Amino acid sequence: MDNLIVWDDHSIWGTDLFFAIDQEVPGLESERISGTFFAKVFEGPYKEIPRWIETMKNILAQKQKTLKGLLFYYTTCPKCAKKQGKNPVVLLARI
Image (cartoon, rainbow, N blue to C red):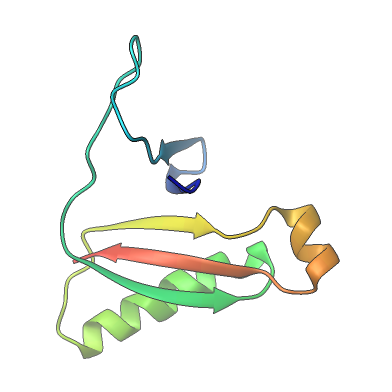
């Protein structure tokens, strides 16, 4: 399985990280993420995330969908993004 980590930035003081796994890990809590999601890729520095969230909300409103939750998939670390000159970030909206 390829590495996949999605983030739930549920508050300015807390973030939950979800790692894709092939099997249960003894001693650790596992959670299955399910539902219907709408995904959109954004490009730019991390400081743009509040604007991307508003854009996502507007897109969903136009589609008459309700945002029930938001996960983030950061495709690169900040150091790699700077080196590559690109910083794609995927927003996964639970609808």
